[in-house]
Amino acid sequence: MKIQFDAQQQYQLDAVAAVVDIFDGQPLQQPEYSVVYQQGDTGLFAGQVQTEVGVGNQLLLSDELLRKNTRAIQDGACQRL
Image (cartoon, rainbow, N blue to C red):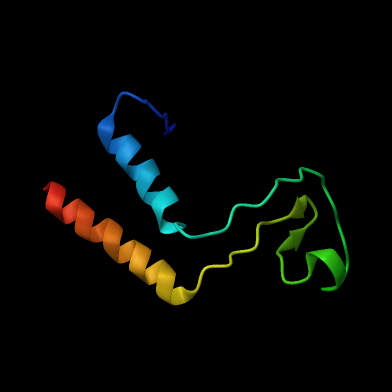
């Protein structure tokens, strides 16, 4: 099965918006697209996910805010039904 995105399907647009809205409140940072592999958890990348392909974004949202955002998405979906 191959998943295809069709920008004309409202349910797909709603799903993309819901995923983005979960992270509402996450501060924007300037992207740096360099691949770095660093041993240990020190320096510039401390606390971030590190793999052989680079460094992942650091989630700065609290669990409480993630739950609040998720609940708002769920409430919005129920109102549209």
